[in-house]
Each structure stands twice: as C-alpha cells, then as structure tokens.
Length: 198
Image (cartoon, rainbow, N blue to C red):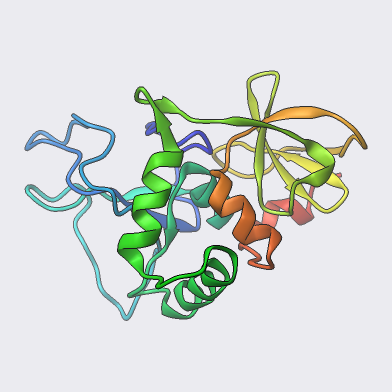
C-alpha cells in the first residue's frame, strides 16, 4: 500500500498490515479497492496467529511500510491487536470532536475524507502547520513530515531527506481528521530507515 492508499504489488510487507474487507477473488486477483468502511491498521504478528495470504473468501491482507503510511491511506489503529493505540487514538478523537467515540463513528467520518469519486481526496495546507506523521505530495511523490524534515517514501523505506520549507502550500494526503489527531499528540511509528538517511 502506498501513502495514496493505492494497492500495488511490491516486494516486502513493511511493518504494518491493513484490512478493508475481501478484495480478491478465488484466483487471488485484486478485484476491488475496498469492501467495507472499516479500514484498520494491524500489527503483522499477534499472539502467534498465522494466516494464509489471500485465503479464499477471507479478508485481504494489505501491507504498509509503517503506521504513518497506513494513516495517510486512511486506516486507523485496530481495536483488537493494537488496543492501546486504538484507545489513545479514540481519546484524542473525543478531545477534538466531542460526543461518543467508537469505531463506527471514526470510520464513518474517515470514509468521507478518504476518497472523492474513487480517487484519493487531498486538500491544500501550509506545510509549516502540519504535524509529524502527516504525508504530503510534492511533484507527485509522497513525503512524510517529520520534525524539520521531509522524508521521501519508497516501498522498502525512506530514501531521501530534505529540509521542510518554512512556507509552502502543499497537497496533504493524510485525511483531515487524522492530521488533527496527529497534531493533538498521536505519534505514529515510522520505519527505521528514517534514522539512516541523511
């Protein structure tokens, strides 16, 4: 999965796994981009459970470089395998948006922010105002906002680092509500390659 939420065939699985329902047919071909509104981000290992990849008539495993990539695609923490992260995400969501909070409420709001006519919904913002963990598009490529830098995404890890401009309008890939949760203090995990690039 890319930060745009596109399903692509790439080597490796990344650090996170996602679920959007049953997306493949009996021949293991992807036939839809989503089946449900509940887009979640899971750990790749949980209590020794092993699953066949693309098992017939079962949900399709999607893989992300890291949690920041999953959030950009519009996925939220899984309430089962990532319960602590899910509860933190919900607590921040409640602070921001009020009212009762749960998976259905979050998923309904995110559903309207992910896609527009089956394409990634983006919005414009000043790069300087974005929190760590948000993704932006620069010249058609996804970049992670991290501290004073921007990190260039690739399927195998971050491959370049540039200083974050002080003032620049950009297309934001991460849904608005998730950007708000990041700004409120949710810190996503990122791939260790981020520490190795200069």
